[in-house]
Amino acid sequence: MARKFFVGGNWKCNGTTEEVKKIVTTLNEAEVPSEDVVEVVVSPPFVFLTFVKSLLRSDFHVAAQNCWVRKGGAFTGEIRYRFIICSFFTAHDFDLLSVVYLAVNFMFFSLNSAEMLVNLSIPWVIIGHSERRALLNESNEFVGDKVAYALSQGLKVIACIGETLEERESGSTMAVVAAQTKAIAGKVTNWDNVVLAYEPVWAIGTGKVATPAQAQEVHCELRKWLHENVGGDIAASTRIIYGGSVNGANCKELAAQPDVDGFLVGGASLKPEFVDIIKAATVKKN
Ligand SMILES: O=C(CO)COP(=O)(O)O
Image 1: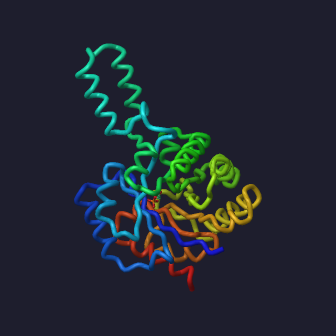
Image 2: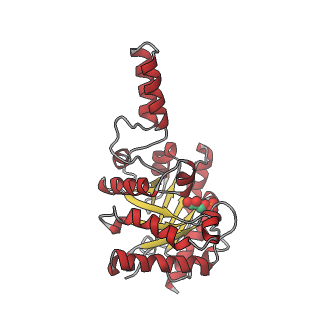
Image 3: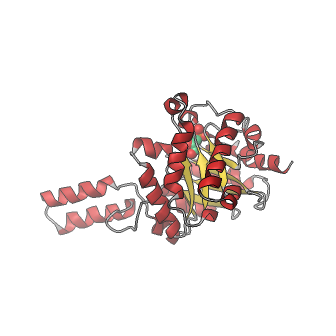
């Protein structure tokens, strides 16, 4: 089954209004293969989601970089958080209970719930990025639960997995990515709405891109894992994309690998060369 090439731009925690406008203008003016050939998704920081959506060409889509593991409410996003602070300071004396309550809310300061994304017509969300796994202690199980909830609300998920350098050097790459994939796969109800992003941690933001052979090896093993543990059709149709120091110069060779179905791009997605990475989709047609 043909898998449509997928290119995601993860802007991470970068951008001013002016920079965002500039990136979007570059994308809007770019001549790229049609939507039939490549699916393009950009993922700005939460605060720019609607702004980018309002400016971006209609054949490109928007993704959030995270969402909360269950329904909103007491686990608030930033806007709600400010509202709660205001209401506490106006409605209560500044007592111990208020401080504890605010501290709990502060812990969830940057979380945007799946329902809010759906409400804003943001179709995609990145879940389980290694930066969140490492810096915010997101476990495999927690990532799996987030995937489950996001899918249940109708979002499409870019689910990230990948090993550290230490894990690769100790020969446990496949064991690590299989365990990460298992925690996600166990929660997926509809694989049409999932893209699996293999992002070796040692390649992220380091300039040390995986070689095409290294990427292909893991992608092929992941597809085998899906075949054995989920099903043949799903293994054949699920897109497995690569992330980690992808740029305009190395994208074509990576894209030529049979099991590399696209990219999740960090640093280079903030630059005009992101357009060249989108164009790498044509490699699949040759
Ligand atoms: O983390 C990444 C995408 O999610 C990759 O980042 P870089 O492309 O900057 O290495």
